[in-house]
Length: 545
Image (cartoon, rainbow, N blue to C red; front, side, top):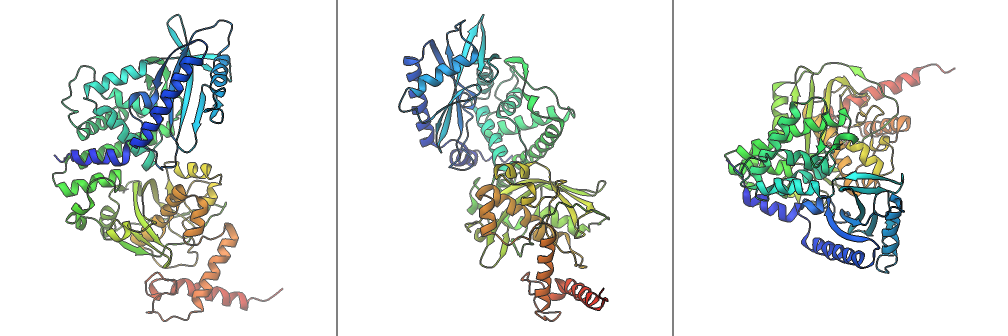
């Protein structure tokens, strides 16, 4: 078995765990806030850590500039003359009176937040106890809400002790996958509950000796639980059974989460059990990204993956009009072998005639040459624009777009979240109203496109642009990446203008295509130019009215 314990320890330290300097600053600030409340808040009894902060499962933000939240529960004496909102107001006024917090403090629905801009937030949650039951306060409804106090923390810590502390590390890893891969959504408390439920109270640490041991055990048990439940179950707070953590999910979100856990379980087991050390590291890197393991040790294994490719990406387009053609594209065995080598986490379903799964993306854009480098070779990874990402996609081979190409969907909902964060419509990210990707325009093409050309020149560039937008913003993508076509009819006219420019070049059939793809003219735009010229001739010959 290939466990890679040292690689896991190093990866956790460098990429997953909260930066030591940030964590120390957080602890100092949190301690100062707690001490100030102890001395100045009327009715103060005690404070407790809450959430990921209490469990030890806080992880490093995706970007160093991202903030993260920590929770601090503040128990105060119950005063029958006060309503729930009054307790929040008391904490707010107390912190506001301190000059160190005046510009940081704000009231929210259930807490008072101290915002250390660009670093972290401390959510101070007032809690009262009545007849042995704990309640937090809803300022908006002015009603108390029952809480488990420290019950969830105590439950998880007991599970963590059974695993010799490895359970909290597994939780960090799975949260890292969620935040970096962005192929599924799950509130941290729900994900943590599933992880804790995968450890049985009666067992010892035999299956949890190391982090990879614990990771494999947990993911296989969670997957078994989910696969036996096609319909979304209740996943309740173990310390407060009446609280259902799936209340913010629906069946579609659950089904997608269930599918993604199945995919990750298969990949983790495959990487864990692979007896070839270098091949195993490659599989772990495919899962966690290029920060895992030692790249210099991968020389021999590199031959087992597809060679890097350099392509000219297609210009994306967008329209509010959705037109679909019907057809069946049969894949050759060579196509399937290429797909398995280049995108091992995409699977072809011959019955449904779809390709679905995770599109693992490793690419960099060379703006000077207008070329996209696809792969994880040293040269590509050394470029400033290099991105490693993944998207959950579905390619419907029986449903064709306006170009006669298979319809592609991003099924994880990530494009909608990016659009929402950028205050943009999904059409601005080149998505049709039905959620399909607007990959580009080839309206006049009669050239048969291979699966390799379709993936490398249309699908991968499309999702590279989406990943770039997620990392750097929509404005940066428009400024630094290749050109886009305008929405709707103006974009069609721009496309026709591009074809006209190519036609004016007067290239020979065997000359390089003027578009810069690197293919011969006859294997690239010659067909489109011919159809364009014939259409232009027909228009000139038509009688005028």
